[in-house]
Image 1 (cartoon, helix red, strand yellow):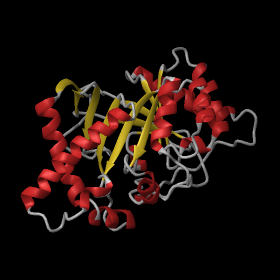
Image 2: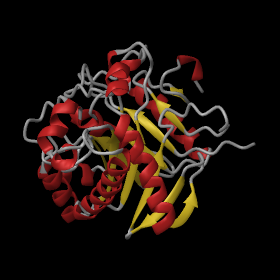
Image 3: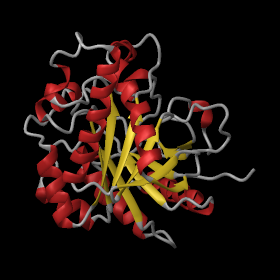
Image 4: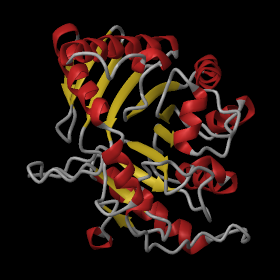
Length: 311
């Protein structure tokens, strides 16, 4: 079976993250990858030569999409982003589809214009609540106390970005009035509320100018504080995932099956994917979901396993 690669994730180095999300995946496993990018040096030739080599390797495997991400917010290191842009331009065939995975913290209109200039095409906004910014910031323990998802999406839309809303599905994904009298309701009434909530969330995504929506099931590594929080805060969120699956199958149109097996649906003019395997741990799926260039400049195929090194 030939390898099918969804995307190439390139990890932006930073000393620490400006957020401390309660479900943070990076905090649930070791990250033994020394930061070899020395931002104080003008050249960093060796580091960038290795990154470029691995970007070319990913392209030869059919990968066409770069995801800017990391164990932190990639927008924290603007100088690195500028250097990466120059490195990408040196490729014989530069990447045309460049995405940034972010909570949106500290990304104002000026920073959006900078990202556009750097060649970023898609803003993949990771969020826990698209109705209530205060609740969203609380779960992210966000460093940006003024983060406003509606304003961010409005500015990104006007500048011309593709917008993907990545909904981190927990029990806090619902609007404020969802839990009013919820515990006293019957099981049938609870399910009816969840169904109504799924319609509200999809409608809200339309209001936020989303081109794409991903509903992401939270991954957890047992024994970590994040896993404990997920176990205690995802009961009705998981029911929501099941409800959305039914909704898009009954009322949407199948677009295609992505390389790693997830189905993509057209629903009210935007695409929806339900990601129940964000860490690519499904043993029944032999496809390599993505490559990852870590902070040390080397390439891996798994987020939580140094043994997955490609080269």
